Image 1 (cartoon, rainbow, N blue to C red):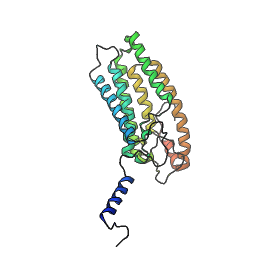
Image 2: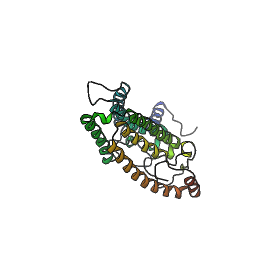
Image 3: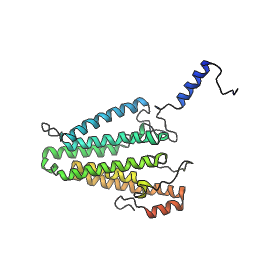
Image 4: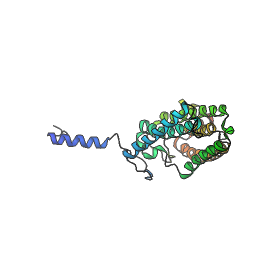
Length: 264
């Protein structure tokens, strides 16, 4: 008889417990990188964040679908959509990573620890919206602009989630500078139309949220900051991809555009 087979009941329990620990489906420890640890990387933290984001999403969606609350000047459908889009985005980042890219999943996958400037930008957008709404509500009355923003944000979110799901373990929130044995170049599906669909998706999602709020200043600011960020990130990432895949990636890059304005 093989020595790997437990001889008694206690040994079988210990083996089962050991196996359970090694494949714990509630674990949030990524394989190839260390979490920032600014937010505790524990299942409790992940579940708490999910609960809070779920509450914000539910309240925002209810406000959006009901058209706002007329008794409260600030409780508009536009603000409701922004809150639902923001919370849905961050929960979706974690959910897609957990479902299709488990080895890279951690509490950082919520992208809430995304740098101070990210939160400053969203906070500034809210301040711009509320101040304008209070002093000059007529400037927020162009409902067709908000409708365009809703469509853009939904398409952007769908594009980004689809890209992450299709790339699966080849996707990373951190630019990979070292090729792993599991890496392959994904060029079909959404990647046949967008060279960096997750970036394009985020770009149009973020701009869409500002169109919903009808924020002219933040809309321009978001476009400029995101264009600068993605243009630099794409250059760094594509240098690594050329090293990984050589001529195969060069041919793909010539064939497929990013579809982000002024980034070929």
